[in-house]
Structure formats: C-alpha cells, structure tokens
Length: 417
Image (cartoon, rainbow, N blue to C red; front, top):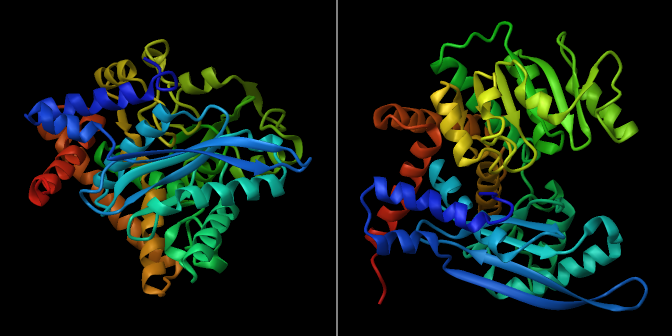
C-alpha cells in the first residue's frame, strides 16, 4: 500500500499492530488513531495580477495527552487531508519516542509555491495564519517548517499571530530566524540527530568506523547535512549522493560541501567531475555500510528490498520503507533505524527553541548539540533494547514504546468529564 496514495490507512495499521501487541482494547486503539481535531479552511488571497484566488488549508491536531501539539506546515499541490492526518499521527509517535512533552500536529496548504511570487506567498501565509490562529498558540499547538516552508514563512506566521494578540509571541512557532527567537543548530538538527543514531548503531552492531562508507539518497537540507556530518564527524567515506534528477558515485569518496556547490551552480548533483552518474535505484542497491534514504516515501519496497546491501539503513525521510520491505530487511539482518527515531533531531531542537522562547533565555550551539546527543543516544538505546527483548524490528519496538507512552498518559488523565 502506498503511503502517498493512502497514508492515513498505513498510519492506522501501524498503530493497530502495536496496540494488539500491547494488549490494548479496541476502543483505546481507536482513540490513538483518530485525530482530536481537524480544521479545514478556505480563504481568499489577492494575487499579483489583481485577481482573487481561493486556497484550501488544513491543520490537524492528533493528540494532546502528553502536552501541546507540535508539527510542521507544508505547501504543496498534492497536500490532502488524509496526508496531513497521517503526518500528524506520526508526529505524536515521534515526540513520544524521544520523550518530548508534545502531541502531534500537521498543517498544509494546497498550492504550488514554485509558481508564486514572494508577495503572493506572504499574503497567503498571513491569511492562512489568521484562519488557524484560534487553534494555535505556544501552549496549544506550535507549527514549524516542513515541505516548501522555511524560516521566512515561520516569521510571517509569528508576526501575524503576534499582531492579532497585540504583543510578540516568539514561542508560537519554531524554525524561525535566529533574530526572532530561533535556535542555534536548528538547520542541521535533523541530520545531526541521524548521525548520532548511526554512531550508536555502528557501536552496538560492532561495525568499524574505519573504512565505513555511506550512500545518501536525497540532497535537500536533511540529505546534504547528513552526508557532511557522517564524513566530518564519523569519518565515513561518502561514495554516492543523489537528488531528484539522479545520483553520482565515486568509490574514492565525495566531498558533500563541494557537491553542494556544484548542485547550486548547475541545478543537479549529476555531472560532478570524476564521479560516475547513476540512478537513484542504483544508489539504493549499492554496497555500503550505511544507506540514508532522505528523499521520498516508499523508495524501499518489496521490489528492491532484497537487493539492499547496506549494513545499516538510517531513515532521514518520513516513510521511505514500506511494511513489506521492513520485513525483508529484518530477515536479512540489516539494522533499520526508523524515521520516528532517526529523524527526530529536528523536532527535538524545535522543542529546545520553544523552551528558550518561553524562558527568554538562549543556549549556545555547543549546549544544544550536547542536549541533542543525550536525547538521541538515550532514545536509540531504549528502542534497540526493546527490539532485542521483544525480538522485533526497531520500527515495531519504537511504536510499542511510543504508543504505550501516550496510552499511559491518556489513562492517567482519565476521560473528562
């Protein structure tokens, strides 16, 4: 089943399986799979040519049991309510996996930001922010950047919300510019958390760092920073990199920073000097110590999982591995670090940003990296130990831990009134 075609059903099936393994009654499983609140808004925006266009946006808040909701806002033509529902639910489990006091949320606007001017994007963002303002806030629901949104978009949302309440509220969003209360280390946080997980996986699996290689699919913010950190901090040789147009391979090793500059100049990683052009499929199936799928959903499926030769798969993207591929990789003895653990560094540093905003007290980059290291190391050890004790793959272990955390919080709070 395609996550892209029916993401909510996949998200529900994952929780259903964990709930059955935990011995939960069906009513509690239903409570865990149904969003607390779904908000759909249709709003007008004046375009540059003077015409009015009506946009549709969503904000789904999945669960409040462990704290306020947290999750990104994406701008994309294919945004759908089912996709946003699924992403909100996955955020709940991601936050619970790494012990953050949040529930999951997600938002989106159906639009093509590549075809919109900066002025149109600002007007659309501010109107969307005004529409969802009644259900967001620093103690209720804290949005963040996601696909095709960035620090500038967060600044517009923060300003719009602040103008409506009459004073500055930096804690209403995370992923802001540092000048508006953003956090040091946020841009590379997802990749840094991934690198910490890879380090821990190599240690517990007895994989030597010397001579270790990595192949990274996807060269957006997560992919390129992951490649850079695996090379600079773990000493790994980056043998393959790719973007949406294809990939490059060099057994002697690639310099991610240099490749980034090449892509900036040419628009693609392909054509890089001394490297062999390859397809994304070839990258996924090549021999390497660590494979990092950091691009699209479902790239590892029943069609190619049996040809994966990596020792460790570290999910930089959300949902890059299908349930069928999970089983194949587990049976092959490949250690897969699931997305709700592996790429949780981003939401963890978003949490740090929120805490700093609420205190009006800011931390150094070194302090943030140290705190992130502690959380990711502890969370990895907890998931890995559970996988061993229950004799399941790490994704199942992470779901068992995360769903149980939320269920226990729900039971302790009780049902009101």
